[in-house]
View 1: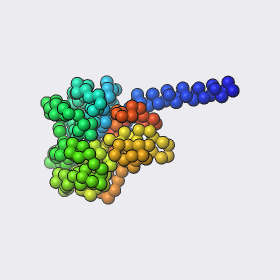
View 2: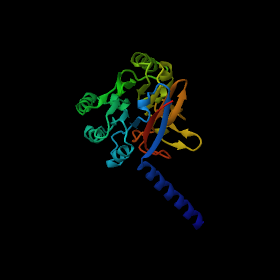
View 3: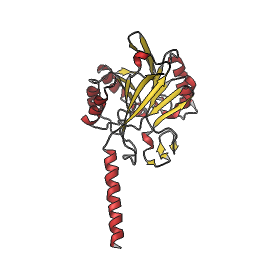
View 4: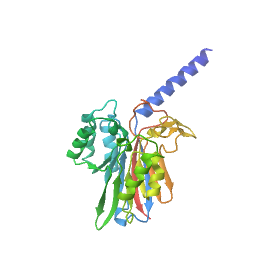
Length: 276
């Protein structure tokens, strides 16, 4: 009996330690994206994707990891802040440090949409020379070649609806207007559940977040639950492909309503473009 109690106690201790350790560690995930529309000047072009910080303070840990990768650009795919404990000063501390490493391209998430004073944060980001990509597109140029990057403002700014209603139709319409399809196109969007809309619009590469890796990752199954996807969601991490569109979903770096992750380490995503 004592041996059983000891084994159970040891298991509980190890499990708690493991959960705590994985919540306090950042994993770096790497993806190579090949496409014939990527110019040779952009072969090796590196993107660091930061998503769903939710005001999480990583101090120099995250900055050092980004710096070590030497990215050409940094993308932030929403939920820089958390609507339940918003702190603009903390958010801007990260922005100011990251800005020293590479140009930042930013789109909003649902938590930016849920705060009443988003305009204040937007002003701070603009003052810091962050590229605000909500419903905008720009070219990135190297030598005489260029690629195209667009961003989608989080649909909760307008309509809290599901993917098969107003939100999905609006996203597809906006992307159709924004994309320059003769070039390699990158789309920044908080929402992975709208993957079919990105495919229909003809985006080449989509960077998304929002799903928090499914919060609890079950071996051989995947994520347990994600916002706007429900239980056993399809898009929680990694690379997804359909037709000519690839989507990389970040597990994110913070938590919100559910304050802890299980078997789901916070993640910095590094994408490298390759000429096909």
